[in-house]
Image (cartoon, rainbow, N blue to C red; front, side):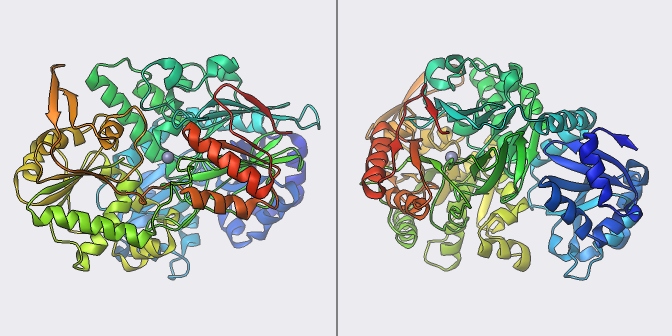
Length: 636
Ligand code: ZN
């Protein structure tokens, strides 16, 4: 038997496995221990065997099929064609050689479940591959295919990498003393370049790795690794809360400058992040800017990603366990719960979160078994940052769009590709199909449809009722006939010339992207409307226009500056934000307050972090901090 996991561990595992399981190898696989078997049917039918090992070891253990029993891909495709009912509409099968997993992408994956009478065990038995299923979107997701492709072409490297990561995670601890310090590298007393370095006696972990979208020089644009004197090669892990660039934009640069360890994120965060990173490279290339990293570095970061679902306890260092939980902000967004030592300290970093249900997501989870330190965002942390109820917000949106459409005008909505775009799509579709919103074509341009496809592929991460619509009823609001996707700039004319329309395009803060073409053509006419639905970071063009600028300068492709007079009314609808408003932040902390020892407030402009810190210390009598960038704080 090939053995790479430590012999103690192997001994105790082997003791609890009956010989019928035909285990041939026990190996580290990143933060998990993989048992390779020649008899997967036995282990699936006797699932208590693995459950018992997990309980006794308190480590994640997974079953993998031995390579010798895995049938060649073509044969497996044949078996799938024969055994899978045609109503499931299989679109493609992706083979992950490292994990021995075949992912079946089907239009109706729900038909491939045990409950629906489909025999998955038989399929595993006949193919020698573990089988997972996924909903295939109507529009193919290039980002998801890109992730699969990268994993496929780097399978050998990735296999070795996972072993190395495992050896690092499960290395013996040096001491039983727990010390935890955080270094504020970015996103403190500001919004942008989120990054927190967590240092214990044993390990160094980075939480988020963003850029500041409005910053003009490197000292303000990137996390202050220079100040913390972080050698990227020394990091044990990077943990990503969600895909937005202000939390992930610097990640590929870590790989460019020497990081070679794991990146933990949720399953949808990976393709969303890949989408945004590839786009950043593309935009930097178009604008002739200095490229922070290139596609090779993006590929490296994809190769190093280990995806985890919500709620799963995972060892990420000898003295640190990680759990992701729903944050309600965007698809796959997670709060990061770190457990240090044997019960020494618990830190929850919220990332961006919404503590209320929206059309897309359930509200952020709050039911942590233990929590001593909370790091909370405070984007909408001022007293006056109160959002109207969802219904009111939706009605305001419907009213203001109807007003413009009835005058024959067009509504231009700048949206970030990921998050608000899908929320607005679901709302528009609902009100239009109910007849409350005037019927008009809704044009989508930029990465919106690509990001939407990823939402369809991961319905488990959506609110329950929406998930059911996508899976059970197959009435996905994302795939409504009201939407027209503009795939090429040459098709823009249709949206710009013809009658009343709603146009949603990226980027959300008017910092580049196809939105600028629509803005240039449509902003000068008072018949149209510019409608903001998302947060506008200080320093961006979106923020300047929202703050009242009636002229905007655009740089055309030849580098010439063009002045645009803004005669179209500019409106902002508050309340579609994926962030908690002031009340929701306070309510969230109130829920956690019996257990909290301290609250650290970040991800907000200075006034906002100050206000939340002040209110929390007064209201709950909990010590609070609202540090700047470049501070070290001892947690334990
Ligand atoms: Zn965000």
